[in-house]
Image (cartoon, rainbow over all chains, first blue to last red; front, side, top):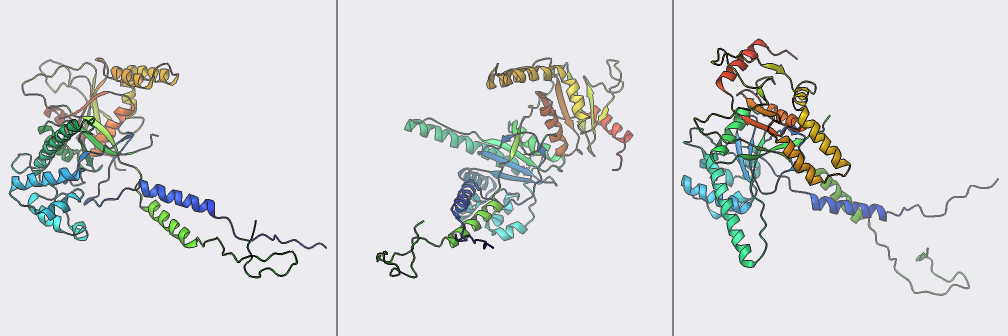
Length: 219
Length: 218
């Protein structure tokens, strides 16, 4: 009886393709990954069939289930300038350190009086604080949200103009993505709280919004 | 493959030449691969893929006071209320005992389901939708360009006799309701719509309708 011949090749596999693929994927994920930011509030956005992507240069107002408003603007330089303007308006001095920390923050929903304290907290403490939302009295006496938006608009426009003249002096073509206004509201929020924010915008003659939704499959 | 035997060198066979000992050119890659997979797992798990999607919308500016709004010929008005209730009427709104002597507008109840709201909108918007679909057909047959299609479709949707939809929400309706309705408008290719405030007379009617149709328990 002939013996069964055992294969004489070594049992080790050539792993090169697998390793190649693994590194390819690592590279891909590293390059596409964006830092996940800790929002102070969970907003469960509604879905729609819209496939438009959110622009990069955006001022975002988040509205949670209880109708609290949170403010965020993407450009860090503009953030610092808005904070300075708000500081002069409400007579609060922000130190350089506070401004720097503020530039790196995400959205916030505290009145300006508590903002200093909020900025100086570390991330863990900040996550525990329940933000009351930015005050927006419709009577206009204490409409801080309006001030945030208005200053953001003004500073963004001056920045745009500065860049335009700069580009002109250097003889470069001027490219700019205009600031867009996004509203990220919770699906379960009452429409009236969204309308309040929209009314603030309307008073500032801003009528065009990006409502943030998630993509839904049309069935 | 030329294997380098490091253990037992030459000297056994007559024909084997003596060679200088060569160090193996293979490196143990296991730690590197381990690390690569660790990183891969980390990035796969933490990466947030999609940028959020957005829906662009223009709100109408508040009309200056004492200005009579022009009448809209072909309009549907949706009234949104609590408990996902949605009512609509077509044309103008006539309150009770109006001075024109017209019969009072009755609100028709509908729902957000596929065969309720969408059906209403599709029926109302059929002429425009058919034309847009025709254009899309022509685009698919490469008769017209992509951009031309978009331009023509927008013209078609914005025509004077195209359906106009007014969305009015009371204080109790949820944001999701408004988004759902606008989404349906986009699906059914309605180009002219506006989200505006409710008139007091409409609110009265809406409340009456809400009371008449108590919410069914699910």
